[in-house]
Length: 410
Image (cartoon, rainbow, N blue to C red; front, top):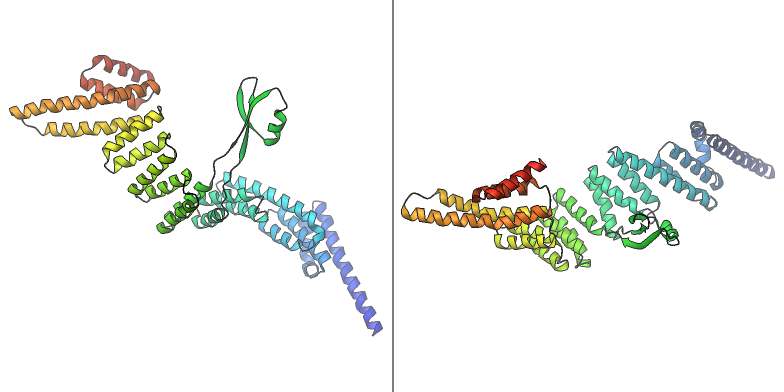
């Protein structure tokens, strides 16, 4: 029995020595840049090394991960790395390998995105997130965006729902400094910001948080559900988010936008009113409310909202043009009625009254267009409209002024 035990131990030592020898040989080839040869060596001894004890199996998997990464086989590299993690002695090497893997993954994803290979880019960014879910959470957000661009809405939905569950907002602090020489403000890194505060060359130091991406994420989830024909889920997604943040302006606007996508203009109108109560100085909100009110036939309030919008935002081009178009709708109705009249004395009298009403409509538009043209230079549509109005009113001086103005911008 003693003799048999000695033989058995001898075989174990010899087998272990062979595992170590083959692993060292492959590692040496890899370090020498002979990646293909290193991989071939591991392939030839795969059964020996995979069945080896942990002290050889873990370095084997680490090497496999390194070779896979060099060949841009990112998923395989990560899978081998997971198996190598079983040996705590390799902790530092595995941390370094993970960082290398993440760097290469992100670089590949950027290149793929630039080449419009959005789906592969999304999957690589998601893998980068999987490797470090806390540190790489931003990559999940970009993965979702690329999945939409692919377009692979089902995959995008998976990614966006993860972001929603963890309430990802993507808020970043941006650092601003102003150069004393030139008075130019620019964005800098946090490290530069701290250093520049000690310099006399910079002033007006300030920080500013970026807007939350959470409303956008919820909106995209809802839009994807809508695209997939699941309208109930689209609305539910927004309502869930709003239940937690009922006063969040971004989410109010998101819900409003979903309803307008669904053709629910009355609900959109109600939500825009709610948004205005949150941000009463926002001209764009009044403009959107005016557009929908006009679509719903509420011309009186539409006009009020357009007027409020251009008061709050005096350079809002569409606000002026839509307001004028709304007023001129009355002119179309007057002209239609004028054309329907005959030549009786009563009809001629009515024609005169309608002519005066038509001129009054034109005169309403003149100060609106004049103000717009004074504030915003070179708007062809506004100048041409005012030229035509002056022509109809018989205002030769105004007509020639607008004609020259048109010629100067053409």
